[in-house]
Image 1 (tube, rainbow, N blue to C red):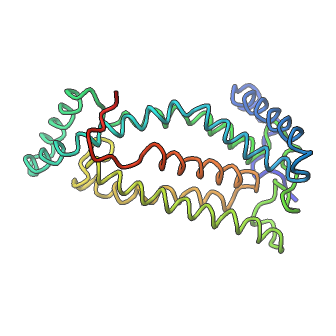
Image 2: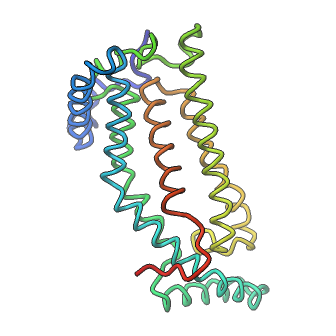
Image 3: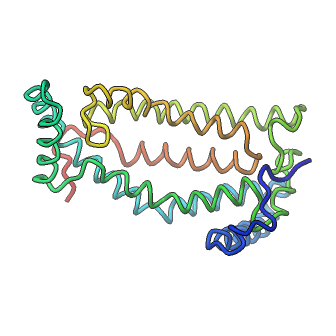
Length: 259
């Protein structure tokens, strides 16, 4: 059995990196959680700890998500004006871009404001991925099991009854969650009329507009090549994203300006 798809021991870059220290702290937290949960969950304690720790991290960065949602709502409120500008300057893309940015500036919004919170979340997700996909910070974590399958086991390491059952259930859940996110991404594009400030009817943005709804399925491809611990993390964080979409991004027909 292999416990890591990426060698981490002795890596000069990671040995002096703040990420390495953060991963070590995260590993200690997961180990502590597993010890607390062991009387209740038995052999699945570490898997349960991964789920709970992922939820805790998502709660920690929820203010960033709220900022992202506020930006999306401001852009959605401007959608009628965006469409009028698209019709008026359909033959002049440069002028259209200029007028769009002027519109966002007058409204105190930014066409790319929603991207910043996502970028700020990246370090958190990097730490989580390194811990659950490589065992960096807690090598023993990937030696624990879920339903008899080691958390460090990859789908390509060999198929057996338990492996097919565990990975199969998680992958099916991940595909279902990705489908929900894809459909909501399409609705969001239709509501705002732009992709990162570019009209969805423009030639370049039209391609991007078709690509964005496919992005949620990328997590399924990642799940095919990472260890079981990382798949658990991916399912949990994706499920949390879907929950945020349902709770925070419910359609609103009236003025959705944030107060």
